[in-house]
Amino acid sequence: MDHDERPAHASSFGAAAVEYAAHRPDYAQAAVGWALAPAPGPRVLDLGAGTGKLTATLVALGAEVVAVEPDPAMLGELRRSLPDVRALRGSAEAIPLPDASVDAVLAGNAMHWFDMAVAGPEIARVLAPEGILAGLWNLLDDRTEWVAELARVGGGAAVGPRDTPAAWRAETAGTHLPEPPAAARFGSPEQAEFPHAQRRTAGSLVATLATRAGVLVMPEPERAATLDRIRAFLAGAAETARGEFTLPMLTGVLRVRRL
Image (cartoon, rainbow, N blue to C red):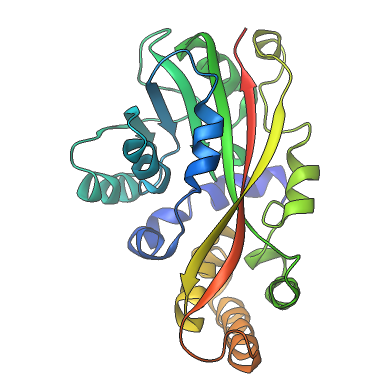
């Protein structure tokens, strides 16, 4: 994706907020637990929280959560589904929280949208000393043959450069982390992956892929053709043609400590 295209992709989700809430997966609890393990306390900021997919897992794990999301439609879905969570409008580049007010900042499928030159110092500002910054991404496990073929058929808009394990490892190895001078405030990054899965039907998987940013910003004829191609593949694959099936996934985590 070109740098100039990023704002349009990042702002595309609000129009599909209801579908996003209905179809996007949650995150493996083991992955979230690993992300939080070194944190010095229970206060967690879910940054770029969307409709609350990660927020809900954090609540289930007993964290003291505040959610921050820039898109009003996504934030509305979060508030509807998680009315007891403190949810604020804001962004990674302008976090509406005081200095040193959280022990961890987590971002679920969101960190790649942040302008880290600006967001890095903001995240460092709100983190307590020894606090944790972690990005989590849900990945399609293309070690399974039909998933690999789905990725090929769907193309880069539906299954992008962070959406399969090997590509995610390469894409996040040295990117999406705070840049100088904020980088001096963080230690070395760690990566880990955790098994995950989602029960889907062909129809619900097409609906899930339709909420990907690359698909949302397509011209309508191209979008329809892409989804029709995916739909035809799922209808013809033995693993996905009838009823519910398990979509093999991983949750990948990139974790770094504030110094």
